[in-house]
Structures are given as structure tokens and as C-alpha cells.
Amino acid sequence: MAVPVVGAFELDETALVALAREGDAGARERLYRMHLAGLSRRVRFLVRDAAEAEDLVQETFAAAFHSLWRFRGEASFATWLHRIALNLARHHWRSRARARALQRAFSWFVSAAGDPSPRPDGDAGADEDLRVAERAIAELSPKLREAFVLLVVEELSGEEAARLAGVKVEVLRVRATRARQQVQQALRAAHGEETAS
Image (cartoon, rainbow, N blue to C red; front, side, top):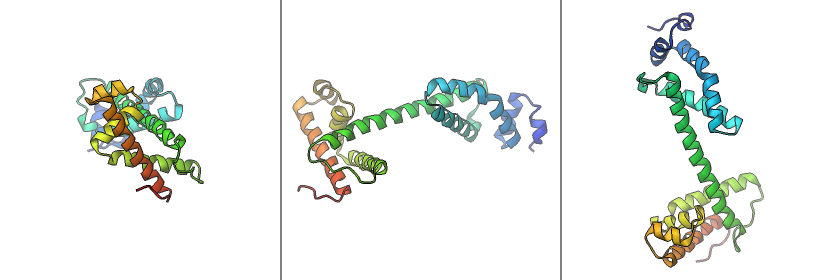
């Protein structure tokens, strides 16, 4: 049976965690208030943008309360929260790096001759183009996708990319060219333009 909210505010952290695990809203609120400032400071060092840091803190608490049954008490609740925040921050960094890499790859299409004309709807169109390009990349054969990612997205040298792929530089460059063509065709189709057969 849940303890009334007033009683929950007088309990120690171990008891609060136990009550929160049972779904006690007062215990969850108290844990949130106890750890908000400390977690916010830590996350601010992990993520530079204040708004992103605030979002990450809220995601951390949501993830923590959702998976509270996993908390075994081997470390402090604050340490556990920090680990969740760090994992979310790592995911955030990977997502940002991936988005930047895709944006770099997409800019290649925009600047290359014969690419689709700019969208009349501005940023929304550019976002849609990026989604189309991302889907097209995902639909490439594994060999073409590998070549595209190594040479276009990650911008590795031909030699380094070929070494990682275990093929000759020329082979990898041909694959990357085919991949570019397929992604360009997807973008042209999204713009309603004729594609070369």
C-alpha cells in the first residue's frame, strides 16, 4: 500500500526508491526534486546546448522511472541516474554525428551537377530531402552502402576505406558512384523529376 505523499517526503532515499518502484507519485516527485539540480549540472557538461541538456535531463528521469525495477541499489540513485544520462548523451552524440554526416553527404548531392533543384518550401523541403536520401541509403545493397558510408559519409581516403572494406580502391569507388546515382535517383523521383534509365 502506498504511503501518503506527506509521509513519502519524510523517508530516506532507499525507502523512496522502494515506494517509487511501486508507483507512488509522491516518492517519484521527491526523488526528482532531490536529484534534479545535481543531474542538471552533470548533463550540462555532457551537452553544450542548454535546451538539449534540459531535454536530456527529462529523458533521464523518464527512463529511470520507467525502468526503476532494474535499480538494484548497488550504487547510489544519483550514480544510476548519471549512468542513464551518460548513455542517453552517447546516443545523442551518435545521432548528432550521424545527422551531420548525412547532411555532409546530402550537400554533395545538392552541389553536384544534375541534382534536383532546391525545394520551394525551404527548410521543410530540405528536411524531407534528407529523409528521402536517408531511406535511399538504407535501401542500398550492403556493398554499395558500405562504399557510400566510407567514402561519402565518413569521408575517408580511398586507401583507408578500401583497407576497411577489404577491396581495391577502384572497386570501392565504383560502388560509391553507383550508390550516389541511386540516391540521386531517389531524390529526383521525390521531386517528381524524370530519372535516367
